Length: 245
Image 1 (tube, helix red, strand yellow):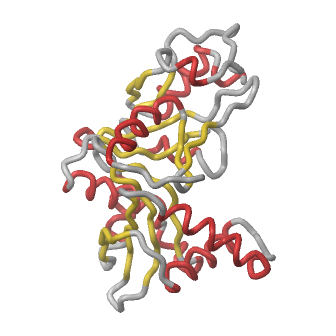
Image 2: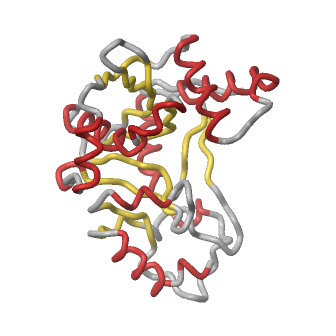
């Protein structure tokens, strides 16, 4: 039986992010793929973040957008945007037949005491994008992001990183958690374009490391390590044996 989270749960959750744990509804999960360790928890130190030239261009492109932090609750407007995004982005042509499944997924993202929705609207008030986030003791954790398929030219996914970092700064948080960076993944590789960033890694990993062990038994082994660029991180990960798995 599921139970609602209380305030203390979010302190535990934030500490578990370094070990690769994530939230789905009221439940926590952790990937455990034998022989693979490419899903790397990544976060951005708020006070060290400086937009790159390319991101600055995207910010200027979206000057007409208002960004607001809202209570996480269901609305048809929010759900339909999410559904359109999932259908277009993930090529799920059977989305209408899976309406109930999508609604449950949507509600999972909004579940939790500290869950919030960040709305992105144009000057006409049209909802162009929505970010699902957890407000944690020391940071904001991005859960999911969806945008209107016909707004792809705006690069709203990248713009949202800047916007949500600004919200984290306003809330006096120290970190913005981006979930996992997966080097070489077409959909996940962009996360290391926002530098400097920190990765949750084990400095002692080697070619003979056992990646199949229970992550709960490894709580003392991982820590956040700072990288100034994607190139620096890739070089370190290759030398440490991460990219061979």
